[in-house]
Image (cartoon, rainbow, N blue to C red; front, side, top):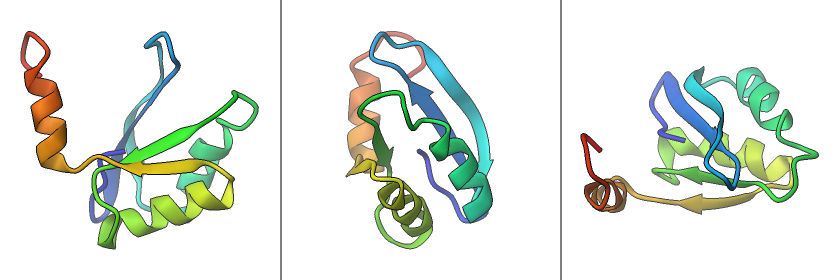
Length: 89
């Protein structure tokens, strides 16, 4: 989840890389619950955010309330990961 002030960009992947979700998502509890709750029953879920404080706090609270694990991948680390792949990152 690339978190932002009023809108996030969410991308949901399964282990083989297939995308379940890849689009903007409003920073609104109802919207977040709607999307994240749709992942229940799919096995272990890990929600990754690019910042733990401020804008990411609601995403983290909703994910944890649903029993999902949460991890943080800061922007600089994400940039480094993207640099490992060929193409535009």
